Image (cartoon, rainbow, N blue to C red; front, side, top):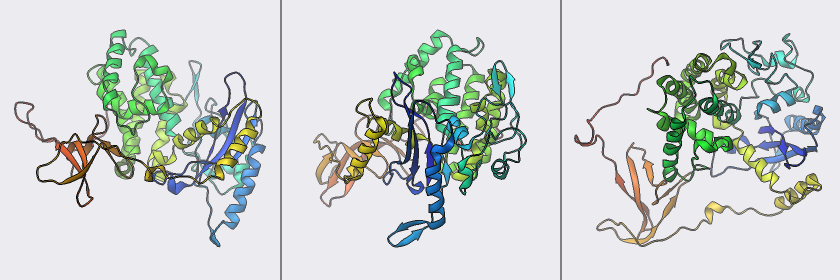
Length: 458
């Protein structure tokens, strides 16, 4: 099971906040069809974040009992284990009772002492000795990282290795947002001109009609970057950024950005992560070193430095989506929507959760209705009973409409869906047009590309 602890501000006009302890059954984390929502283990309410860790005691006591006795299911005792604690940096520091990200010894993963530079705590080293589970648990380290005891030490969890870095906060809301701010408001040598910003916004908005429905949000312009969500920064880093920046920004800036994009892409790809995690590590280390030279040493702060350790968590737990805060953050938003008035928020949420647990859930995917049409196109000689606008697969959907109609087949063909039909044998068929490669000579000269890996460089 994964565990998440995070703060949730409730109202704009007050300091009232929840600190939920959430759980997520690990086997469901990456299976979209069987994905279960996180569930509430405990819920703390107050006017500020907890001043002590006593609010974790009921959770720790119950987890200890489950570790010893297991979970009773159909008259069998199943073993219980907490695999990871998925938290952002402030919450990780709080529940482990260690120095925060602005402290001299604030890094979760290594023992280096930070350098206070330009009014910021920076971590310039990329090869410091790793921080060890037993050193934190037994308070053997002499670097003042540990502020005191934590009730989590009573559990069978590694206080370093089982607290992975969360790429949603570290990469999307951290490093990627930092780069965009440097391009808009940084020092003159790397700051984009108004004409560059305007052109970048124009290009980004041209992508909007082509974004598949699997993306949570459509791409917004640079004018709205202060309001971008984590999913929008992720989309820019992995998909739209590499295309929209090419040829528009200075070569060094683009190459530096691509180091981050390629490194994170590897660590998010199931087929690449297992074999190329070390390569991704070298890419990200080079990115951090080059950022120090390109943008200034003062920008190698906690989030930027954390990229150095990201591949180690990926090697231990698989792709970064396995250890991401995204499902928990989505659930926190749903939790907040349960409130109907400012009075007695804790009681309201408990009642709403109790009401929901008493109602049987309906599997929406099994009751989804399909939209029929009669517009074709059809194939000669094919007897068709019905035509549909879309077709739902296990973890994605294809449609006739632009944005969801371009598909990469298993044989590497790229096709554009023209129609979804059901024949007289009740077989569902996709009618598509296939892109031909190589292209004709008058369009582009045929070239053969070979995928190879070299030492990363800028």
